[in-house]
Length: 368
Ligand SMILES: NC(=O)C1=CN([C@@H]2O[C@H](COP(=O)(O)OP(=O)(O)OC[C@H]3O[C@@H](n4cnc5c(N)ncnc54)[C@H](O)[C@@H]3O)[C@@H](O)[C@H]2O)C=CC1
Ligand SMILES: CC(C)CC(=O)C(=O)O
Ligand SMILES: [Mg+2]
Picture 1 (cartoon, rainbow, N blue to C red):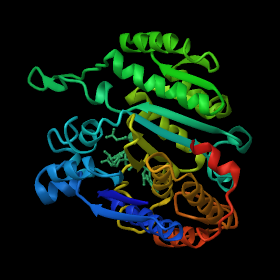
Picture 2 (cartoon, rainbow, N blue to C red):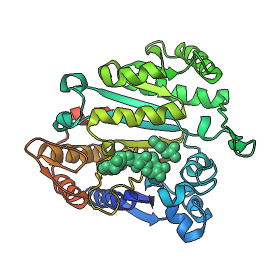
Picture 3 (tube, rainbow, N blue to C red):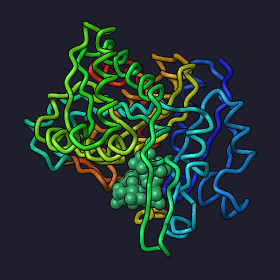
Picture 4 (cartoon, rainbow, N blue to C red):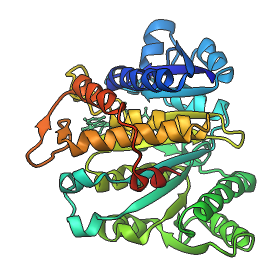
């Protein structure tokens, strides 16, 4: 298959890890006879420095015409304080909204060699396998007005959702739960927020269309606690934008590091943007120590969701598993008796293991 892939490296470690994904994809392409053509474009601080805007028209056009998009990460001290930099029409939020990528899938499944890398107890996290589905183009991050008032002494942010925005993400979550273990946890703050009360009503309405899926409602504060005390309780979690952002970083603790989590941001026709869950990590940028695995696993999600290349995706996931099984880890992780390596070496090890064809079922199932 021939595919046009847009690369948006962004800032900080985004620039370092995107290269890892490209190398891995090239390796898979040559093994399977695919042709992936990569086109690199600017976003975030990098785009401000080059073009004076975090989301140039050229980047938008390229993404609109692409088969899929891979993004590293954006942001950094130099740009974060610029007025309006994170406004909904700009940068990362802007590209998500412009492309209509309303569903953000964040699979959280630990690799068994990393059970010791988590600060949580092994018997608590063992076997956990969660799919967090986060609404991505509405809610507080996109609400207008969002501004200072009263000479800068007051502030307003707006939480707006249209019913249709809730319905489509909740539908997606029921469909995903049906393909997994048929358990759906809806997370909200319905004891306080009107938006959450409408969310809960819609979940109840939709549940009638999916009688085979068991639904529960949890308030977000209790959900945050349960996520790390009883992670095995969860199968699919669906929640709005802000709650999903926070809960997914929290859930990364189950896997040993934020650097391990991939994500897929998709719309109904399968077009997608794939990026690790973490940010640009300015504290380690330029040191060559960033964990590239969340980015590499995001490339696997791209193959699966946008190109229907299940075998190729599973092969990448297995190569990551094998690399960890061999004891290789980056500085954000630890494997007893293993060897700490940098971004480049980790990528090389994954590439080496890609030649191994056997695909373990335990790994592939989690990313459905
Ligand atoms: N999707 C995106 O592009 C996102 C961008 N950001 C932006 O990133 C910048 C930094 O934000 P932070 O709050 O520091 O969050 P962050 O996710 O960049 O980093 C949090 C912590 O995790 C570590 N970390 C993250 N990814 C890692 C990896 N692959 N390997 C090893 N360690 C890793 C970092 O070193 C840091 O200690 C900000 O400008 C923020 O706005 C934050 C989250 C998501
Ligand atoms: C711009 C932020 C909402 C990025 C972020 O933290 C995320 O998508 O996880
Ligand atoms: Mg986040």
